[in-house]
Amino acid sequence: MKKIIILSSYFILLLASPLHAQVPDSLPHLGDSAFASLLTCGAGDEFYTSFGHSALRICDSTQGIDYVYNYGTFDFDAPHFYWKFARGYLNYCLSRAPFYAFIFEYQYEGRAVWQQRLRLTNQEVNNLFFMLETNYLPQYRYYQYDFFRDNCATRPRDMIVHALDHRTLAPETTTDTNLTYRNHVYLSTAHTLLWWRLVVDMALGLPCDHRCSNYEYMFSPIAMMHQFDTLTVSDTHQPLAYPAELLLSETRTPPSHSISPTLTFWVLFLAVLLLTLLGWKHSWRLRWLDIPLFLIPFLGSLLVLFLWFVSSHYCTKANLNILWASPLFLYFAIRLRHSRPWLIAVQLVMLLAACIMTLAPLPQQLNAALLPISLTLALRLIAQLKGNNEIK
Image (cartoon, rainbow, N blue to C red; front, side):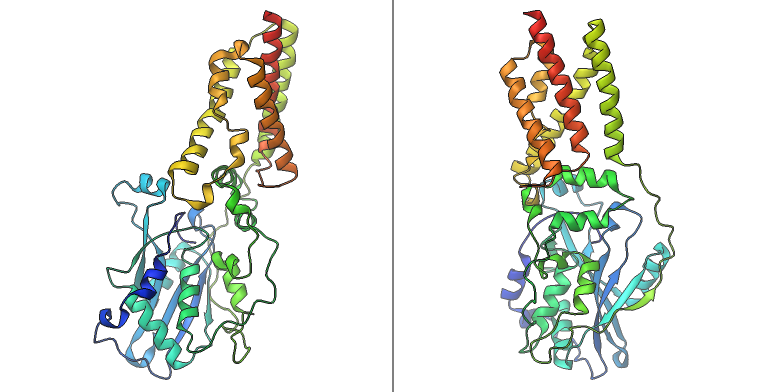
């Protein structure tokens, strides 16, 4: 999915629009040799390219038409880019490029590209061409991106489905893949992007633990490519696409395995445990440790609350990371040993719940690195509670 996260139902508006009046009169009718194909691109070096990418190709060599339609385009130089992105109002757009230019870009980046020719009738290829050209018009090409429900993979999928002429996709043989949206993110960040996974896990809430149907998990370009090999149409019961053909092999150097954040935070926990035991023995207050340690989850709580209540991202709502990234930690950072014991007890219960959810991912799966983080915070809160009792 070429380039990051956000939300909308623009496609419904497109289908409801007077398309025939908008398409240029000069749009040619594609000949019998024309074909349409789904292009799937492998992961790139940047985080936002790690999920792969999808695009549609329309080719009619007799008329010199060979275009790639790409729903993953956005402008880094757009005014207030990051603010719009954070709030969920960043527009993505459909771009069109010659096939050779598209291939050259991915060859330059060293990324793999697969092509699956679609089993479409000539009328369906023309339907798809018509819809894509209409969607490419300036008044229709922009949409609000949603990482899971409206992205560079789901838009080509929906375009193909709506281009079918009196045919539909056959009913799914299974209704549940037993994988969540979050599981699919994990598959794309295994071994090399573990710190990014931790950040994404902190931002994503309960909606991302929804179990995906076969249709839903095609938000992932690579998953959609595999689906198209077996997804059948209602009349012929043949797969919607021919088997994937490798157009470009991967030549980039894959990133090296990253240091595990879980291991890193277990080391931190052991260090804090040692300092705490020494502090109890020598009556150290360790304010220099507790203040930054408590401020970090407080700052995390501001991010969680912003994405939950201010952002329009549906996938960041109801985020139970608030159990450990709690605004109460600002109070603890200020009051330290003078914190009210009942508030410390409340936060300890919340941290216990976070620990349990890292081990038994219900109702929300929390990142495994949050277990040592939660234990570290709990340890220092217990130290504050002990110091509170000594003052009395």
